[in-house]
Structure formats: C-alpha cells, structure tokens
Image (cartoon, rainbow, N blue to C red):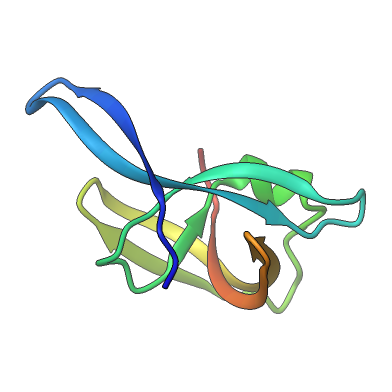
Length: 102
C-alpha cells in the first residue's frame, strides 16, 4: 500500500484543509523531472498542465484529437498521451490528459 503525505492548504471557501500530495518523477528527453502532484482518488485520469507538457517536449501533432475533460472547475480541452513516471520505487506507464491551456 502506498501512503502519501498531507499538505495544508488555505481554501477561500472551506478554510484550512489537508490535501494528499506525492512527489512524482516524470520521464523527459532532458532527464528526470521531479514534480509534486495533488492526489485525487476520485479522478478517472490525471491532467498534466500545458506548461509541464511543453517541458516534457510534447508538441501538437496533426493526428492529435482534442477531447473535453470535465471536472469540478469546468471543462478543459486535452490531448491524451502516455507518460512514464515514478512514485517512490514504483515506475509505471500512465495514460494522462495534456491540457491545451493554462
């Protein structure tokens, strides 16, 4: 079982809350990219920001299909991609959604 540390966040609506976060290392052509992810156990798919995708070397390809992703904050156009990542000692291939705006 994997456990995650909690981070304290000041919500403008709920006040002080605890959110689960994980240190994740993404594989990129420039080498490992360590980043902190919010753990959303109810999400169907992880959304990668547009800027992180650019840092990973992702570019729009002619055959890319934009798919709408809906969440609590609204809708975002995304491109589905595969990403190699590591959480702790576990490495895996993950299907992620690359946001097309920041």
